[in-house]
Length: 88
Image (cartoon, rainbow, N blue to C red; front, side, top):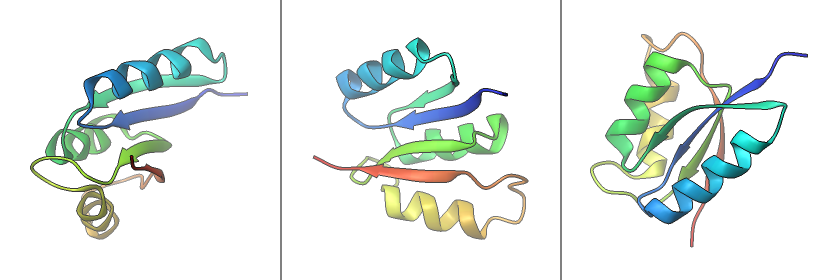
């Protein structure tokens, strides 16, 4: 079975690190990117094509809802990920 490629986006640096560690410790998951704002995660999605994105709703530069909308309507994105949304 292939590993599931996962990217994480949250403006809370500690949360990104914790989620990243959990993903890296799971033999079925591959961490392909970490972002601290909406613009960064959009770039990671376009470049790394993750299967799943763990996404915070409230982030600087672009919130999580806008990220999902932009990615889902971007014809240049070859592979649209599934989103898991987190919020404090």
